[in-house]
Image (cartoon, rainbow, N blue to C red; front, side, top):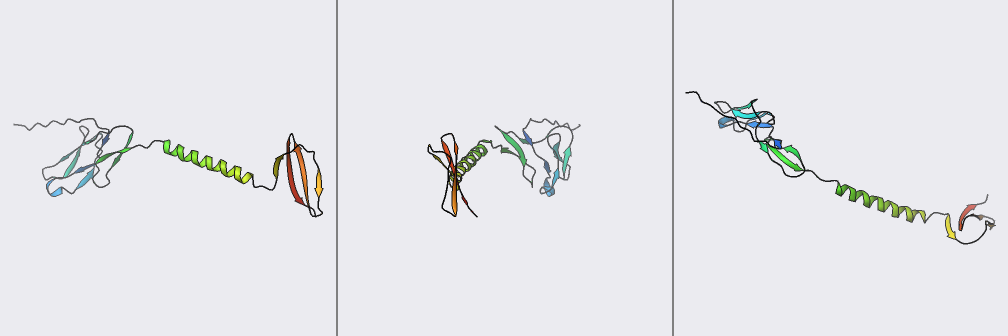
Length: 146
């Protein structure tokens, strides 16, 4: 009688990428995209890649990316990381930059003060200060006279 074999595949999320041999070839691997092919061995145990159906793999949960073991070609599910941690880090960076800008801006030579005075120039012979009025705000800028 003829031997009849049936190949049935179960849908998977990620598929293995290699076939492993048997018997004396149990440490032998060949490349085989099991999304469209399946693994088998010949009568000596050498691995073969068959083109009749999909092969083995894994089913994944949630958000994932497919990966594989580099040596064996076994499929693995890699959890996808969301962007929330990136947004948190970006928010912290922006907050630090804003605070640094406020602190640095307060240390400039020109100083804004809220005084109801008019524009004037006063000098001591070497360093003079010019005040510029803008509404209720006055900008006092020191400069050297040469």
